[in-house]
Length: 104
Image (tube, rainbow, N blue to C red; front, side, top):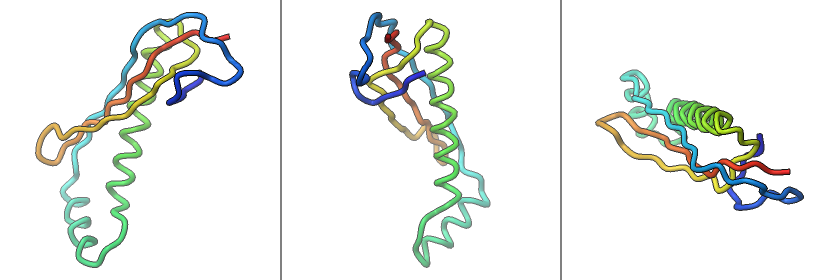
């Protein structure tokens, strides 16, 4: 499966557009991570627990989007975009979407 944020894939021709596909993941902070992040904020530096949390959420969302595309018979997803939103206090959604296509 080709995944790209561009509208074309170099060396390949889009032969069929199958539709919009999406995947999402909602993650909540764990109190321990939140407490450790607060402490880290006092001294500065990267908040590794949150980086890991968001990376996992992105990978889950991509996997779900890819599964959505495979159901349509796609072999590529073009125009991929990410968005995030706060769902509730301490919980965020990562959404990824793109256009499922067949390329040759």
